[in-house]
Image 1: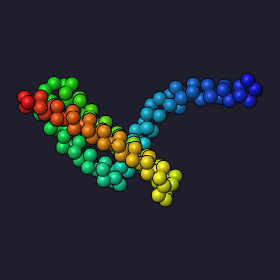
Image 2: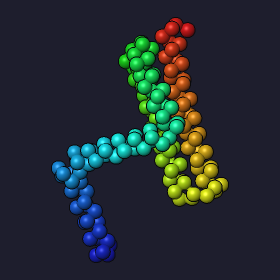
Image 3: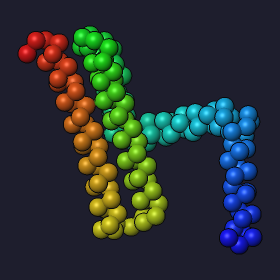
Length: 142
């Protein structure tokens, strides 16, 4: 290993050690991540129709889930499926935004990338629908 590589390795270890110290990571990092999350939620809710629609559905479905679920694990599956859908939708939005930034003009590879993200959202919607249908069928004895 060259002396340059050794110093970079030592610098990396030093930065990792600092991240575990109070004020250099830990709670401060978690607090900063929380504010990044709030910013992402604001941006998504103010600009993306799909996110607005899915949040509206989740806000309606959350209280309904208490009546549909017959046990705690069914409730976790119902709510978890909605949270998973939102997570996939936010990731899809991030991918689309990055694609638009990197290649503002229409481009075949970018179209395929966006289509793949859309397919991911479709499967998250399908999963949520299956979970909710199964819970409803169980609740009403079908």
